[in-house]
Image (cartoon, rainbow, N blue to C red; front, top):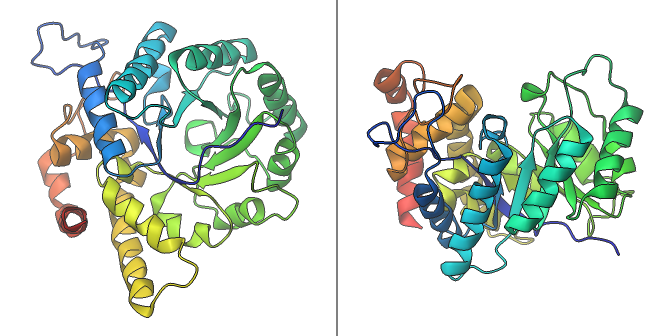
Length: 328
């Protein structure tokens, strides 16, 4: 049986929330999970039109959690959706381990927690010595054993700049249990060589960008959507851009609107590119009032460098997109 990919659209790589510094059970070394805020944020995104969530990816600080905590986060979000009227809401469980056996165990746990897909980070510890054939064999071994369909997650910035060429995706797309990829890099040519490749079955393999600043152009190249950090705090705006961008015969006004909206999202996205998970958590805290601004686990600490002064540098861009968000 050939598995189906996650539906096209806009997904959010959600952060993992930890209890506030003001909580009695706060621990500076490893603050406990805040499952209540996790559920609140997830439901806010679903109600704002987000297609689905990626949980425990890079933004979710997957490498900072134990396997027990991973299950608590995943199952907690699924319960929140079931209780909130979002049964069968798309959930993609991230993995960041490099050992095949551990990755498969995390995927089994993800299925048990209620996730329909897995997102597996390309192993990069031995990036300099890895070959494309080795990467193909690694993903094949994982996919052969996974109880849920998996996607290839290529984020060079957190995996030692490991290289994955377009032909590798084409090979792996033939596997019945590999159903897509997330490309968290700025190489639009690679997006084109994967998303527009006529040898890749688009009904079975979906290509997502990890950067909302590329959403409009990559949709024109046959990609399925974005798994985007900015959508974690401005969800309606990114969804609106997606809806405008997939129109086959947009009006002249819609063409102008989506171009301007892409510009505004791209400018804000620079905050995510510069500060990553730390910037996303800071934005969610300041804009949505959820979680602490510096609510990460060590070695991430202190929020964005420069604090209020640095945030002020982004105020104009944030205010412009916030106005859009409130108008939708």
